Amino acid sequence: MTAVAARPRAYDGYERRARPKLGPVSHPLLAVDVPWLLYRSHFAMPGSIMDGRGRPVGALLGTVNAILAAVQATDPRVVVCCLGAEQAAYRVKLYPSYHAHRPPMPKELAGQWRRTPELLSAFGWTVAETDELEADDLMFSFARAEAEADGRALILTADRDLFQAIDDRVSVLEPSKQGPRRIDAREVRRRYGVGPELVTDFIALRGDPSDGIPGAPGIGEKTARDLLREHGSLDSAIAGALRERPRVAAALRDNADELRTFREVATLVRVAVERPRDRDTDYARGAAAAREHGMRRLAARLERTAGAAPTDRALRP
Image: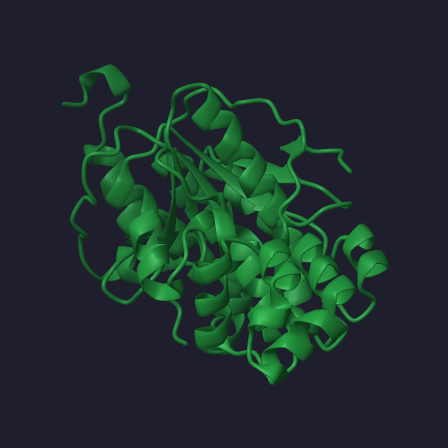
């Protein structure tokens, strides 16, 4: 386990059927948004899924299945499972309403959360944790470290804040029922109308309800996109506010400081992380851990996979 000090329906495709490879990204680093997967799986999986001691394990099962599906599709050189604070203290200091609307973690999920690092580590996956920043910041940091070492990185999440991390060496993997989808810069431009480099400016203008960021009053997705296309940045849009319609001009002029704060809150923070060495998924130990947690069907599948998997990466085509 790595400690980092620093400033729907759950996808269960691994259990159901094989997924095709996603393409020519050779052995990338796979950074995983564990908090997002745990929350999604908790609310999507049946609460009746229990281990032998009567403890709920649905969130753990959904999380492991999603990671295994991504491993199967991308053949990563290493998997880094990232956990962090619910909200970074410095972001709350910048904007006190950040995440303030979110309810406390459900009790049933909290118990599974505590068992998550041990379970994920059993698969040979690196677990990186920080109490000061968020998992998003860790994923961003590992992805940048990998890119700067001339490697490639994939970030497993559906949190669009991570779109700002995308470049020619970093992509986002978005879980879906059909298997994980790769999001690159072209897809970001298709969805938002701007590139990854302007995602934080876009969030500041449009807002992000999931994080409690309201954005500029009266400015929605289309107007935010048009402003950034015309002006090139949030700062330039504010500077050129007088050329806009009166309502838009007032929203930019009267909320300029708040908009810059929203952008800072949305911006990922890079911290020093050590680039992990290659490490294959350990299906045999993962199967034993799954069985200990009452995931018998998953354990049986992992045992079959372990029997068929090559033991040396050099043997792979």
